[in-house]
Every structure is written in C-alpha cells, then in structure tokens.
Image 1 (spheres, rainbow, N blue to C red):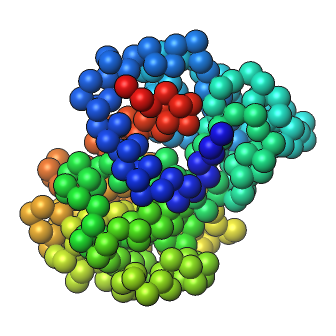
Image 2 (cartoon, rainbow, N blue to C red):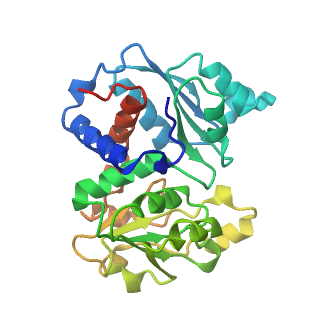
Image 3 (cartoon, one colour):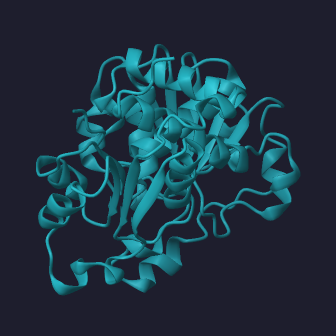
Length: 306
C-alpha cells in the first residue's frame, strides 16, 4: 500500500507514468468510466476547499466510483475532539482510498500511519500539496512540451504557499530548471526550503521583489495569493496583500509564449482583464487537476494497467 504525502513520494518514473495516464484519460475519458465501479473515496476536508475537494470527487465519479466524507472540521467529530488518527481508523474501514486536507502540517502523515487504505495529502498547512503539483506538472508539460530546461517565476506568498514549496521540490528533480523567487522580504521562501532543495548544487535560483524586471526571461509565471488564513494578525495581511498584482500592462513585459499559472483561488493578485490573454492558463490548470487525480487514484488502487 502506497501513500502520497509529498510529491516526492512518487519517483520521476512513477510521476511520468501518472502524467502519461492522465493524458490518456484526458483524450478518452469514457474508456476509464467504470474503472472504480463499486469503490469509494473518502474526502476528509478539515479546511475550506473548492477545487481540490470537488476535483477529487469529480475524479472518483468519473471513474465510476462513489464519494463520502465531510467538507469542514465542524461537520465532523473533530468538533468533539476526535483525533485524526481515530478518524482515519474508522473511515479507512468505510472507503477504499482517502484524500485529506488539514490546516496542521503533518496531519496527513499521521493519518497514513493509522490507515488501512491509501492516503493522499490534499494539502497540509503551509507544507505540501502534492496533487496540485501533479496538476501543475501536467499543465506545464502539456503547454510547454517539457519539464526540463525551464525558467519558472514564483510570485507572491512564497513563505506559506504550500503549492510553491511542492512545485519547487518537484521541478528541482528535472534537469536545468531555474527558479526566480519574487516576493516581499516578509514572504520569502522559508528556511527549511533554503536548507533543503534550494541549497542543492544542481538548483539555480535568484530572489527579487521586482516582477517587471524578470518577466521577459520567464517560461512560466506562477502567481500565488497572499493567504489571510496563514497570518497571525490582520495588520500584516493588509500591509502585504497587494504586494504584486498582475495586469495587462505588466503582461507586456512577458514573452509571447510565457504561461501564467495560479493554483486558485485568486483574490486580486491577477486582474480579471488578464483572463482573456491566451497565456493565462489557470482555469485550464484547474481542469487538468481532475485528470491527474483520476490517474493517481487508479495508480494507488492498482488499477492503472490497461
């Protein structure tokens, strides 16, 4: 039994297999419409979510399976004080696979230690978000044709942004990728990322607080939301929330084939006027997440062979 707590829990070969499978499903969804008939996914979301929760549920329904779970901690026995360990001990007797989102880092790992079924981390605090990373990899590969030899800019909240941390970890495994980290000083990448993946001799990165001056060099611009829920006080959030706003004027600095990604939801960090730019691919990115989650579910259930 395999769990996916970090994007690195899949090897490069396994990741490639998953992306290839997602591409097959994308091109012929009907062929996979009964792969999980009679099976159930439990979606345990202790934290609000739209895309991640619904895309997991859509993925399982597309595969012919069923869904059970909860959409907030208050609608579960966590409100009565039940531990994650006890919850998963019970739920893993009801379902075949489980996706869990939790505001505390490490909660999905704890769940995996007590589970009878595969656990997928659907986001834990500011730590990891592997299935968003798989959707990101699929998007980049589909639209840029490769996962190596890319210059990727990450802009906004790089301190608390679990999607950023996950994607940097994943992209660092491919050859000749470089990172441009664009943020205010208060939201720079955390120390554990600096001492870990960014300190690796094969990783190249620069840091800046000027988006316009680096946009022309980027293959991918990954925008992020300044996350109110990660801040300890409202004053710091209000001061930093408008640090970077991407608009059509800034898009003039970018190359004609750069793509703009965003894990969503956005607040105001991307102006709606950018949506009509063909380089804005964040809604396609959200769509691709359904197919990568379908592929991952099949892999973890051992149903990925034709």
